[in-house]
Length: 358
Image 1 (cartoon, rainbow, N blue to C red):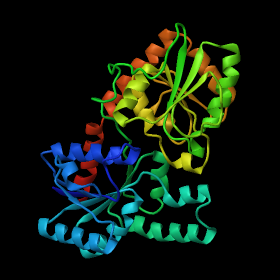
Image 2: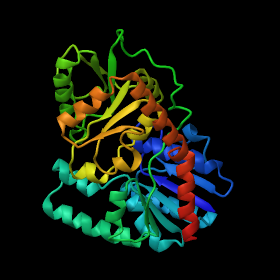
Image 3: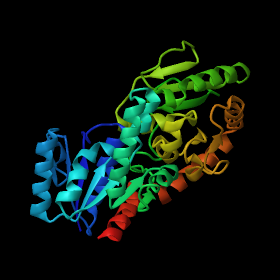
């Protein structure tokens, strides 16, 4: 099977989507069943471990380049990562015989609407155009069951393939990094990621300050250089670090939190950090947005609370004052990840999709 993967960006980046593209590309390259090539914006010398060619960000020239490669190499499947590859995939659907697979991370039109970056007319026009494209794809994968149900309104050939994690980087044995001083008896609550409005950091900080009044042993540490709005001796901000160092931050914490609020973006997207948190073997407290409950079994390998529910959030944290409880949840979280959420496991799920359409 000859597979060409397209990413309209650089995979040599430490954000969620480039990490996913890079990780899946490495797994596809290992498969005996797949003759794999990637094209993206990175300099070719950086990706010597892959069959690779560079895109230019000139849409017309890139389409010509991709078309010539497909024809010359008799490519069976072209997979585009995110809707940003729509510009390439749509014409390729009509000018080649290759099967088109779209790997979705979220909905551009919904995020733009949420941020107010798109007007009403453009919003519905985008939904119409993208809807036609969804219909024309040979298969679509999404990162949550909620997203898959939406896509199935346009195309029944849709499937959820969850995110994954590199367990050589994220695992409970990673030594804790020296990011902060921890006093005896302190319980460190950690958060990693950005400070975009849907992440719920104001909720997290307000809830923590209320919790701290009665339970002074808790300390909050945010691995996030943005949103330094709350000055408190009990809230420590750490600037962003390289992705491979996030694992040692996670293992330095006792509890890891995902305080996302309920909104349209969070309803249809799934936070990849959940799986990285679980792989770190730490107790997790996450809000029940999107399909969190499909990955975390509350009380077994993590704790779930209703979005925006301060009392529920604080109650979950209070229950984790007991180290034995934290350790038990962490062990189960790690077991869940190594059995179902490695990149090798997810790449095999993609292979099943490819086999089904050729």
